[in-house]
Amino acid sequence: MGNRYVLFSLGKVKYALKLENVVQILRYENVMEVPKAPKFVIGVINLRGEVFPVINMWERFGLPAEELTKKNRIIVVRYEDRTFGLLVKEVKEITELEEEEIEREVTSVYGLRGCFIEGIAKMGEGLIIILNIKEIIESDEDIHIAK
Image 1 (spheres, rainbow, N blue to C red):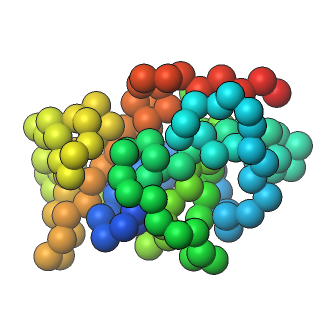
Image 2 (cartoon, rainbow, N blue to C red):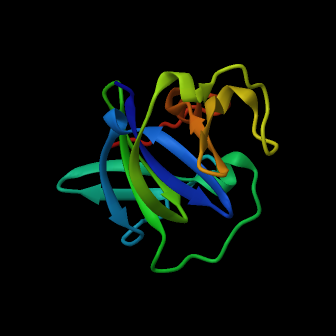
């Protein structure tokens, strides 16, 4: 039995996060800007009394910005004891991937640093980049937003 993943897109590329890290998927709204936050943090959101940062995934990966629309979503993730929102183009589906479908020996894809990538899976005719949530949150500039 494989792991379940949330599939989402940035531009034309599909990415995946382990479902076990995903708390909720929200519409992109009510994000408040925060001064002096890292460049890739677009602000914070208050969800039922919990305030957490929202990461612009285009900025985080160094991809060209896209116009925000009603299709944009914030994937709320929990890593260890911290909560974050990840701004993405749209959420596609939830799927299960078997371990043997995932290629783990990947150093750099689509210009992403290898540390962000946990693996690549084939799905139909396309590829899905499986992301390492720990590295997205912790590498380079650690994200510290005071509560």
